[in-house]
Image (tube, rainbow, N blue to C red; front, side, top):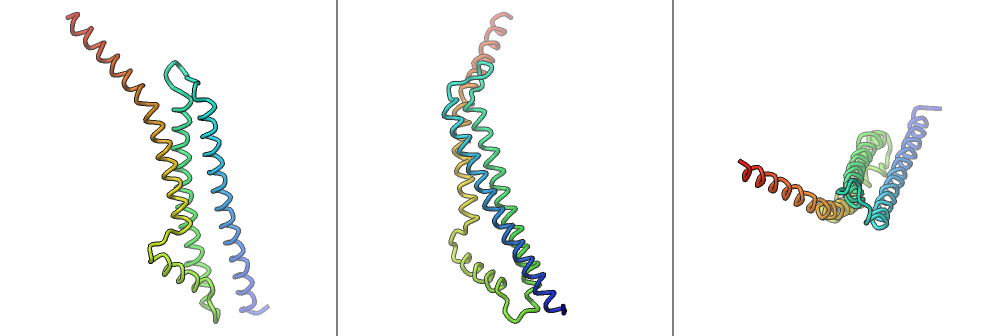
Length: 166
């Protein structure tokens, strides 16, 4: 096997690995979407459950939902960065030896497309993660507000009692 054939075989192998990496990214997104659906269902079916006379299941699940959305956003961002590295730093360098450079051309086309301010799939994934986190955050604040109001009432009562006792 000569040098060109070896390079071509390495190129094919790396492209296949990159495709598998992208497939793992889609599988990871499915995992996060299913996790969010399960959290929402858990919130619906446990909305009357209260722990320690204060913390509702909804509060706990909304906090978990926020954390899952943050992890999802970070994961999308990391996959996006790693995919770009695989394209620009590895595959395109391998293509320098080829007469036609398909991934180099593809990246250039994507960049031109992106410069038109059109959302890419990873942008949509991040937007969904942010909107879902915002939804969970609103529920979290809605559940936490009465707890803080109750705490401030107790502090105010203690201060008023302490002040009147002096």
